[in-house]
Length: 175
Image (tube, rainbow, N blue to C red):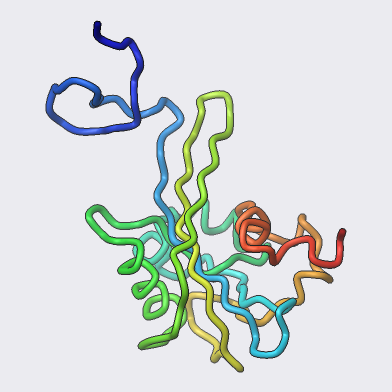
């Protein structure tokens, strides 16, 4: 007896228990860096992205989305490139968005969200680390350790407060 279920097993070939179709809302595989300031767990590295920066190349954001998200704080992050591992994406984000040749990171911590009328599916690989300071980088107009306890949801771009909540960094003083 064959099942009628469709599993999230995607491939280009026709075999049982897999599909060529992706959800109508799409699927995004993304890596996020949550780097706290040493000794200050409430201070998380975030930036205001520079809409004139190469975000199509370093973060999978076209010019319109880069401009739209440039007003709020955002975590260093990117969609994974085709065939790239989550660890490879984290290392690429360190280099391309922060100018760091290396950084001790733990993870990935993996989370999934499905939302919207068309069931968009996000698979999120979150890496955590800490450091004392950060230099400015041209990908950002401002890059800083932000006190997330003093930051409101509307000051954060791209719903990155969800990522902070996944790793226990959002809502620390909010109860």
